[in-house]
Image 1: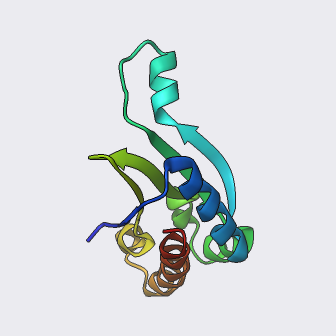
Image 2: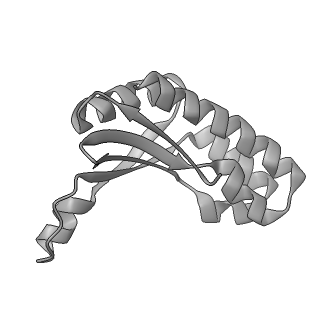
Image 3: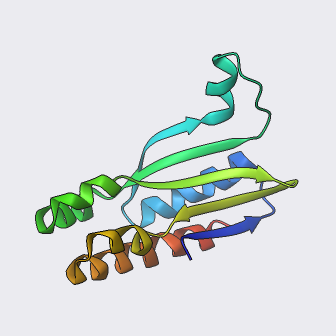
Length: 127
């Protein structure tokens, strides 16, 4: 499976706040928050779905991964999405292990597995 997604009873802003706190505990920072609804409407396009993309990074892990295989930079920073679907708030991400498999590098799979475990725990703890 390509993604990891959970449902929460929190609204989008509460979910993002909780997620940021849990990411910080794992030494991940939010580099950028992209509000897709706002951007599309700004461009004159009709889009009413709440959908936010957070780009997250742990600088020490990024340096460690890029030192081993610079092609991993194609997958950085990690993305976590928070959105409304069918009246429910969802938090999800593409699995780092699914992405890193494209490199066919066993050492990188171990790194990706560690990052994936840490990020999925952050997401689970944000429910």
